[in-house]
Amino acid sequence: MSNAFIVAMGIGTVFVGLICIVILCKILGAICCAAEKNVHTEETAPAAEAPKVIENRQEIIAAVSAVLAEEMGTDVSAIRIHSFRKI
Image (tube, rainbow, N blue to C red; front, side, top):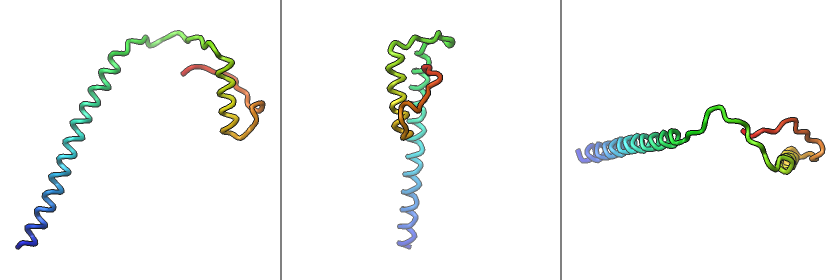
């Protein structure tokens, strides 16, 4: 009878712990979702925004070309950038 009691207490402890973890995850999920909704509602940027002018366009394109050439293992002169826009 003692062995059954130990097994029942072990299984009960595990399930109580798992239920506590599930409840904690749901609470934290609700808090995080509420925080994300507040962040999105605070943004008041218009949907159709005019494209902004990039000041140092040639320098940025040169830097991007150098990084791409390094990653691809080729020379910078072998890379041609046809368009460049801010996302």
